[in-house]
Image 1 (tube, rainbow, N blue to C red):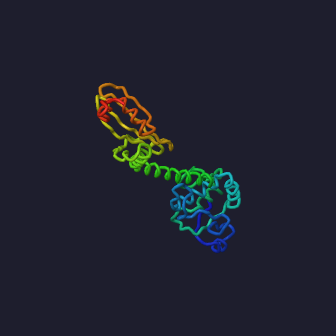
Image 2: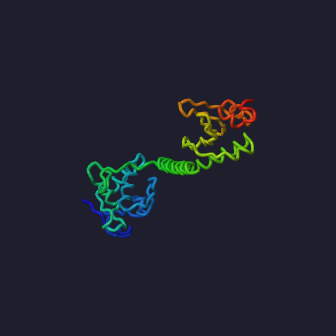
Image 3: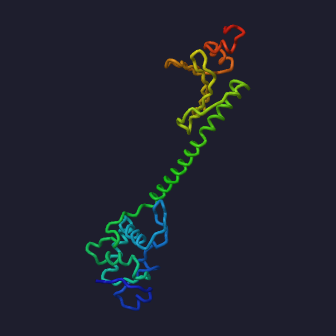
Length: 255
């Protein structure tokens, strides 16, 4: 049975025609070396065994199988020499089994059937997906952290634009987290009078801003929601609530 030897190309030539040099710079050399980055998305440096496994996976591929047949024919019955120390995994062991084993099985001593080598475009796609997920995760985390302050700032600015300078006295609070990437919302409590609780709700969904007046019954589940379009229109809505007597007492609570 042919064996693996250690040496350079000149050493193989000096022995006899029964020895073939398969180390670096030969046509049988392993294009993958320990220390190279693996083709996985992680891209970690490979060890000797991983480099041999990757070479085996390459030879099992549709293109590599052509070379595997050539190597098997060219190296059959020959001792194989490489520069690798005999104490570390070497692709020469793989070539010995390929050229002399039953059925020319392409395997390593570490994995009889390793995974096929992925096509470079598959590796690139995986790396792109991983990078994209990292960007989206970072964006979601940033949106989550800033959602509350952004909601309050947006509500403050829009209320002042819609309702005038006195809207600056409104104390907006975050209402709760919905789809924080697109939907900002906040609430400002106005008063509780005559068993009714009055609140202003701000919403910005997909760039469409709005403020609504919500009148909730404190002793029943009923709730009325009205769109607020101006300060005057807000006054009209308030005139229909018990709060109007407190707001406009000079007229006895009537318009």
